[in-house]
Amino acid sequence: MTLTLSNRDARRLWLDAQGLSATPTGTLDVTGTIEHLGFVQLDTIRVISRAHHHILWSRNQNYREPMLNKVLARERGVFEHFTHDASVLPMSFYPMWTRQFRRLEAKVRKWEWHRGMLDADGRNMIKERITEEGPLCTKHFDTKIEGPKEMWRRPPHKLALDYMWYAGELSTSHRDNFQKFYDLSERVIPDDVRRDEREDEEQIDWLCKQALQRLAFGTEGDIMRFWEAADLKEVKAWAAAQGTALQTIEIKCADGSIVKALAPLDLEARLAATPPPTSRLRILNPFDPVIRDRNRLARLFGFDYRIEIFVPAAKRRWGYYVYPLLEGDRFVGRIEAKADRAKGTLTVNRLWAEPGVAWTPARQRKLDAELERMARFIDVADIDWTCPKTPEKD
Image (cartoon, rainbow, N blue to C red; front, side):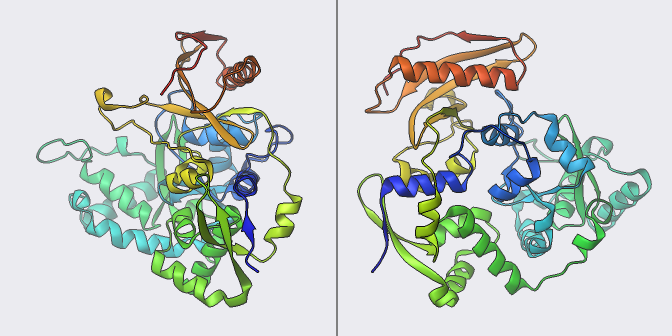
């Protein structure tokens, strides 16, 4: 018989698989957390804390912002590359990522906006400078954009640096105030890791299996979107080749519909061992891995979320940077908040409850406690509410 997961069990498995089930305390292992998640997305925007720091803090609130660069630059426990976006991945995954270098190199060559990069001679000059001078960032070069300065256009040297980074010729050495410094990959990636070569078939098999492990269950599209390092045709071929090594299950969605998904054979045992999620209320980042796949988010939680940073202000439904609120296994609201570190203030500008959620005093106390924890995380003293603590109606 086909196993059918209730919606609540599906949410419980997914939150546990992504490290949001247990209370976020205890011994901190930054590299271990990233390995458990598979990757952590990087993002430049800092409204309260940048996405990568916020994501790690959500799993263990002993985390502090300088810790990630230490793991990257000193310990070489992680490397940076591109999943669905720029991310950090465990260094142990590097041998399974070399195919992605080739995939992205081929894609970058076709990008219209990337055609202004330096030619092979120009790229070699950059590598020669890095060889002689050590890690360099884009500010160490001065080529100029030709033609109109459109939003996404970059100087030729920046395009060349990124192209060589996508292709694996250069790697991120470290970051200084989030400025990326590029170095030769052979000086960043340990020799034993860099020389561990795997066939493409083995890499695809690993990518699919490891994605499904971190998803707990998923459609072929879910598996593809997890890393964005294999296309849907490749994922479908992999799934077809698994035979009885996988099972097809049914998932009850938040709206009552049923979808079919793939799952490991031990899913029932995994479910039995998975505890209910903590009842703590959590302020999650818009780029959190549980939020990122909007289709899966809506399917499992009935939570319709879009980030509106690129939406003109007058057309935004919510706001520029609005944080989802997770309590237990359900999303109960959204909050718009911003930090002013110079003034030592975390300001709450707007608060919404999801339809059907009663905003009780106990729930407000949970939010207040989470805001206090977040203030300690970013080292500010005051929390300033510029809106009522009564949530707005959508």
